[in-house]
Length: 485
Ligand SMILES: [Zn+2]
Image (cartoon, rainbow, N blue to C red; front, top):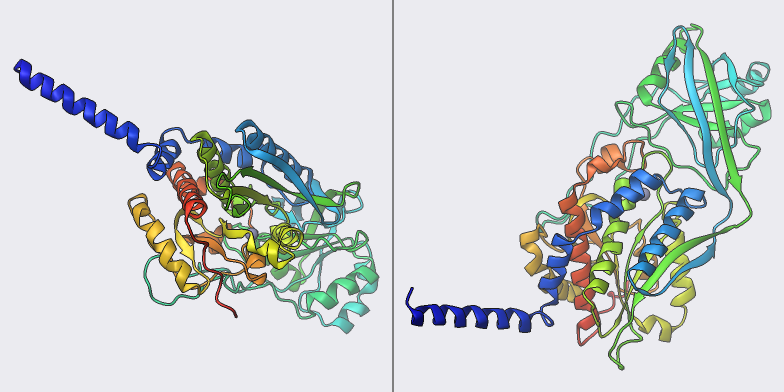
């Protein structure tokens, strides 16, 4: 290389470097990507939530551990006003011990889980199971003597299993049915609502019913209004329940051993949302809030990995990325980790009721972005029928397509934390995720484990969330309000 050519090359390299440096402050999208891909904390956060803390039932000590841990991370990253925000939830519950086994006609440990808020059994129960799945209410009443202190099989053998996932909405523009699909339920000749009070009056010791999921997968939720003196209740893997119910129907003895020990927590009837800010800097816009959120709570059987540690991690990591980059948004960007989602969107509902209860207050919410149902990467957003907002979101999504984003769809999706915002007339949108095996296998089951997610998808979801939050915080105009319904 001649001297002249070398100096030209040096000049070109210098100019290039200058261009890179001067482009950086404005190129937040590129910086968000670089931070989110090269220095990601997403997997480590996800491991803590799933492996270390595990299932996070609202009202349980585990949920409080998760909330305090998330609060500490927000504070450690230097977010402003990091705090826990209380709302009244009610009694907490935690499972301390559960074992369910068939003893006769042969020994077999059973895959079984207690309903959340089930009372404990009176110690270790052992005895011949009484099958009432095919009995009418008068027949059950006539069996009162047999039912006192009994282990009761309450339902018919499970005939129909969960076999399908909801359709994938992010892959083409055809209209698509969104939201939770209808799931087959266990059936009994006497409906459960009538059956359980009958069993309680008869003094039954515990009630067992089948799960409608296949292959040892057990779906379990629970009702926080369960009376502490109701009959303890347990869900058993469908196939195993069916073996016992068939034997019992044929009059063959089935002996079981059951122990359920659970604890209620009454001292603090509040639950808590975790909230933290990146304050806005534009005097005219900084009181407006771009809110990004996800529910931190889960049901109590698996680890709540896809429902919803992945969403919570996307929000935490998005906030970390923006803060680490020293982002100075025009509007305030606020991260929210809700609790009580699984019991009826309670945390988000409380937040909307407390903070957006006047027209002036509602006017300050620029947009709410939520990350919940599904797993895998973020494909786009459900636009809740808001065509104007879709035009804006489409422009923001286009540069993310090389990261696996596909499209925003005009349809809405119910049943998660953006709904209370929409009900208050506010623009709230949920991400579109993958539904492979989500409904059929993972949602609210003992199979919701971290293996269902990979690091790239966790990183991508955080980058999409951070990018959208940044765009919404910097835009001149607000996000158009939802069309009136
Ligand atoms: Zn859920």
